[in-house]
Length: 621
Image (tube, rainbow, N blue to C red; front, side, top):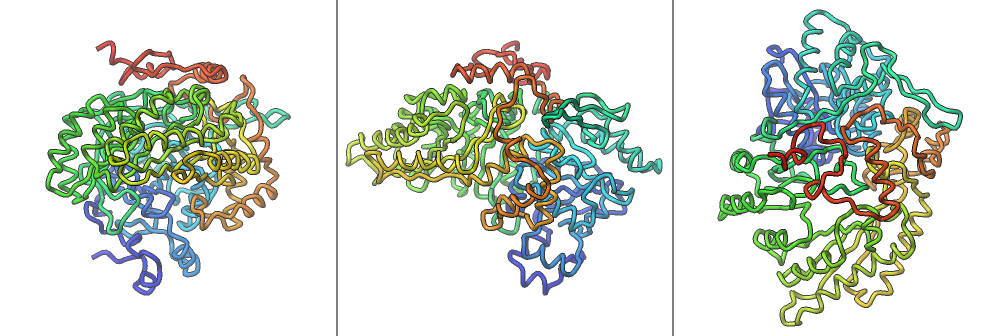
C-alpha cells in the first residue's frame, strides 16, 4: 500500500487535502523497479486548474503507454501547504507514487500563462532542484518546458534545461529514447543535452548566446555548441488521425474547473485574427476524423462517469463535421443526464440552432466575442465579423429563448481611438435593443447584456508583435471611457460592464515579449514572496514593482515602444512555419484596416503549407 507524503495531521488542517493524495480513477500506477524513465508532469498552478488541462492528459496517456516510462503528475501546492512544506522541509512529491520529484529523471512543466512563472520557481524550490540550470548536477532531473509560452522561452531560459517547441505527440519518443540510451551508457547530463539538441524541435538554452545593441535591442542570437541548430523548428502532427488520445482520462476526487469529458475536434484555426497567438502557432488547421471522435466520446463517457462532454477547439463552428458529431452525441447522451457543451462557437444560424437543441435556455447564457466595438477596429484585428452578423445572431438567440448574453472585448488595440472605445457601449446597447424588438409576450423576462474587456497584450508570432502597449494608468483611463459610455446608453439598466486588471496586463506584456534579461525580475519577485500571481487574492503588484526596481529592468523598454520593422525578436530563432514576412504584411494590412480572408476562402501564403497537412491540402484532395 502506498504511503502518503503528507501525514493525517497535515491533511486535516489544509484546504482540500484531496489535491495531494492521488489515487484517482484512471490514474496510472507502475512498479518503479520495472521502468527506465520516471517523468513528473507538472502544471504550475493549483490542482483544480491543472486537472482541467487537456494537453497534460494527452501526454500523461501517451507516456504511460510506454512500458519503460512512468509518467506521474504534480501541481503547485496551494499557499497553505506551501508554508507547511517549507516549515517542515517536506520535498514536493508526485501524486501517483508520492515520491519526491527530485528523484525523477524528468520534470516537465507546461507553460500556459506568463503569470504562472513564479510558480515554476516554487515548484523547483520545493523540489530541492537548483533554480538555475547551469548549477544542476547529474543527480537532478532534466527540467523541460513546453506549451504556448515556450514559443518565447527566453524569460525562463536560465531555469530550464530544455524546451520542447511544438506538439508533444511528435518527437517526445525520440527524446526519451535518447535519454534512455545515454542513461544505459552511463552518460552525463551534458552528454544528454548534446544529444537532445539534435532532436528537431528541442531547444537547449545553455547552448545559445544573445548579444545586444547599445540601445538594449538584440543584435544577434547564436548557438555556441557546434551541434545546436541556428533555428529550432516547431513540431506539428501532419494529421490528427495518428496522434494518441486519452480514452481513460484521470477523474479527480474533487470538483475542478472543467469537470467534464473534453473532446478535441480540431487543432488550429482558419480565421487569422491578428491578436491571436494560438491561431498562428497551431497552424495549419487539422481536423479529427468524426468516426474517431464518436468512438472517443463513447469510451470516455463510459470510463469517467462525467456528466458533461465539451467539444474543444479554437473555433468549433469551423469543424466541418460538427452537425454529424452533435447529432451522435445527442443520441448517445439521451436519457443519461449528460450535458453537451460547445464553447468557441461563432454567431451564426447553424451554431445557434445547435445550441438551442442542446441547452436548457432558461439556465444558460450565450457568449459572443466581437473583440472590438467598431467595425473599423474589427477590420484592424481581422475578426471577420460585421455588426450585422452580431445583431442578427443576437436576435436569433433572443427569439430562441435566450435572454442573457456575454460580450467579450479588448481595449488598447493598435490604432484604437476614443470613438472605438465608446463603440463598445453602443454595440452592447444595440444588442439589448434587439431583444426589446421582440413582442413582450414572447420575451423570456428581462435581458441582461454583460460586456467584459481585457487589455490587449502583443504576443510573439502574431501580426501585432510589433505593437506598443500602455501604462497601467492609461489602461484604466480607457476602461473609464467605456464605463462612462455605458452610463449614457438607452438600455443602461440591462447592461453591465467590467474589465480586467491592468496591473497584471503590464506584467504579462513584459514577459510575453521579454528576453533573457527579464528572468532576473521573475527570480527577484519570487524571492520577495510572489506566487500565484494569476490569483487576485495572491497578486501583489508592489512586490513586482520592487523586483523591477531591484534588478534595474525597465518596463517601458519592453512595453511602451512600437518595434521597428527590422528589429530582432528574442524568439526569432524559432521557426513555426508561418513566416515573419507574412506577419509583417498582416501588420501593415491592419494599419490600413484591411481584412484578410480565412484559410478556407483563400490561401494567403502564410508559410504553414510547409507542413503539407490539414486545411493547406484540403482543396487539393
